[in-house]
Amino acid sequence: MLEIIPVIDLMNSVAVSGKSGNRETYTPLQTIYASSSDPLEIATSLKRNGAKEMYIADLDLIERNGNHNIYKVKEVNSVLPVILDVGVDNLKTFEFLLEFAYKIIVATETLDSIEELEKIFEKYPKERIIVSVDVKNNELYTKNMDLDLEGFKEVLRKIDPNEIILLDISSVGTEGGFNKPLLDSFEEFKDKIILGGGITAPEIEELSNMGINKVLVGTALHKGEIELNPF
Image 1 (cartoon, rainbow, N blue to C red):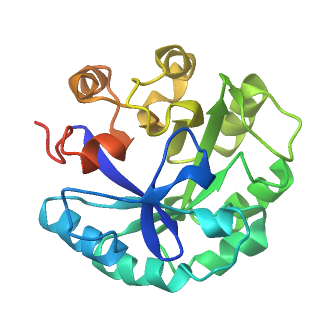
Image 2 (image 1 turned 90 degrees about the vertical axis):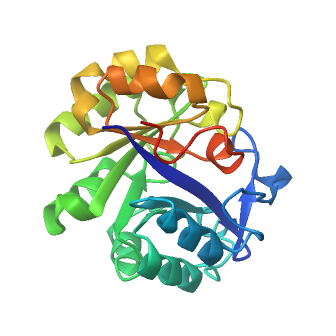
């Protein structure tokens, strides 16, 4: 059964929404699950409606604009298990986050090196780690590593994570549909994939039939176009 994982982005302790990763244009989130953009209120409602976990991207920490959201994340995690993305760059950052969330994302966008990724996997259980393969314009999106998508697949085969987020950043918030060629190119990792980026309501059944176990949904979920329990 396909699991819908709700997504929110945080800035200044408030849930926000935007498109395609253009963070300077983000505005307070309007969602059918709450009367405000307070992440704790949203999480409480999502749990009541059947959510098992939620994805939070702390945009302030990703941009290194302070850690003022982190205790709000911890509050949310006490209500609904949080998959947290704060732009982990190395083992030290990863370790700091473990007390605040259920699972920590290590994303290609911000990771310093493959060596730091390997250190994390050597020291901590796979149950606490999710690797995010960030893709922009159909290329691996990374600020610090000299790798392409095929090269990173070799890394994934070596470390063998339990879960892999496949995130098309170009499609985030667009409701333009998931990137099928990208997903097809990761066929060997299908059982581990959590798919994100532009997923629409008609695609949910298709993805379930393809054998995808989990998807990240933000905009379409908060608008009520995709249900938490679609089947």
